[in-house]
Length: 215
Length: 215
Image (cartoon, rainbow over all chains, first blue to last red):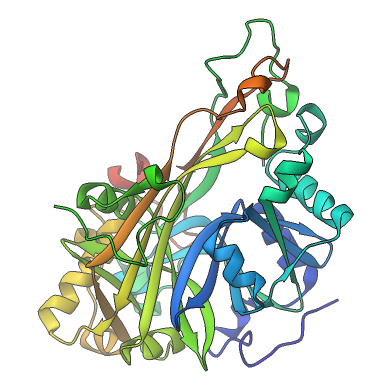
């Protein structure tokens, strides 16, 4: 299944970087941690980073019910949500052809407030599992009060596209003779050694999903 | 020196996460690789990832002169540029208090086209050095034609702020007794082993700034 190409998602240049199949778009969304949410406040653009999760063809974001962003978006305004993964620094022989390898997804639409309690709880589960699978089972679940304090918004994945650059630098033919090192420095978001909370009792073991955390 | 707190940059909630001193804002900008640029097209928000560099109190972005984003921004429309660094996954004892450690900067303003050739070249130098210091010296500099094909925009850092979360989870007092592991999984963007371009002559050595690349 593919996303339709719209005026907004069709690439005007470098069309071969564009991808519209759901598998590619979903793969990027499922790997990222943070999305950048763009919307207008008093007619002016605002871009705010936040966590998110995908469940089938829906994207969920959440936060405090006091959040200006969530209250604005719940009003049904136009929104653009972008997720970007940096994969490498592309070092060409000329300054001009330097680039970065990346995978990004842009989603356009309007968010809706999730009011159904089951969908809301399922979204919070997904938001937790998206960050670290297995965690939800171990922790105290949200209380009714916490549920009321939490706003969850849903954005249908209807108008979306991916943009991807991979591979080596593409230099001008005459520059391949230059004696300049060229190639790619791969970049990756990696997890370090988990840090115990200072108030943890000594005999609480670290779960496998934390110890061996890997995206 | 600090940025003034405006209606847009002042934090309505979690005010202690807000930072307005230039040193903090500049430090985050100088560490990131990709910014997310938000602007309106036909009255609707668009958020596009791109590289950037800071020179003193100016932020530069660049790209093809055919880029829709750069052409729109060069028209002097309102723009919001956001840079986000993910520092850790914050695992609390309750689902509700899970969080992420991050540092982000939001800049508001209007971009201007850089037309002065010296400033334009200095910006391209900064954009290159921002990604990998020492590179510019080794590579073929832009030709006049390449300069013409490249658009550089400048955004003055006048209205900007940082938002930072650090440290352990903050659980409800009564949850500290739960036998649930809690703490932080640090996250970091790291460089892998450089990959030679396939058309590199065998005897071109890899420069130190690539071999020992570190942000």
